[in-house]
Length: 217
Image (cartoon, rainbow, N blue to C red; front, side, top):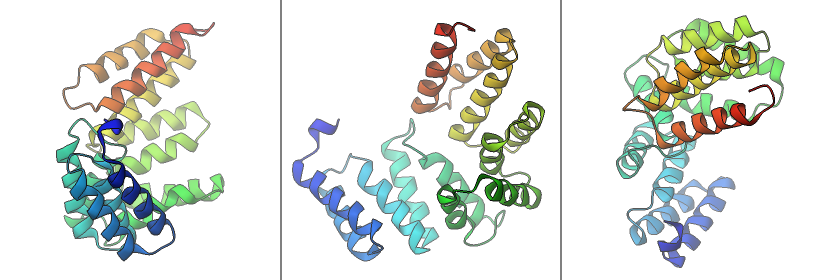
């Protein structure tokens, strides 16, 4: 728990994140490794170190670090499982070298139309890459197009985090159409999946609790 983390480890972690944010990757990695040494069971320092390595373009080391995080937090830790799966696909030759770093940076795009166009290109070139379908679905407004994108994502053997988000979004489309029975079946699929992450269950419960308490629910 956060309260059990030594204050010095928290300080080093914060300084490491700040250094990474300023582009000083070597300093960031040194500070984050020191934090990890003081709090070896805390996933935060290696998680931020993995991201730093990815931004530096060292994808092999980034994958190893994400694997370290996954071992520390097997029930999921932010986007660890999704990024780890993406790096494994890249290193297996399913995605071009440098794809993971470029895809992560899509988060900083602010023009929805430009982002949709780029994602359509990615899904056309890599139709078996689920996170691109998930990102595309989140930007589409037509329910039929959205559902098609979600189904395409589910067909591509998504990692547990992406799979849960794809299913939650499908449930949302069904719920918006008034088909709560279909939405509930999806919820059951999520919570009964042995590979679902803790955050996935939390997202699913939040979605369905909100639906149940809404006037339309």
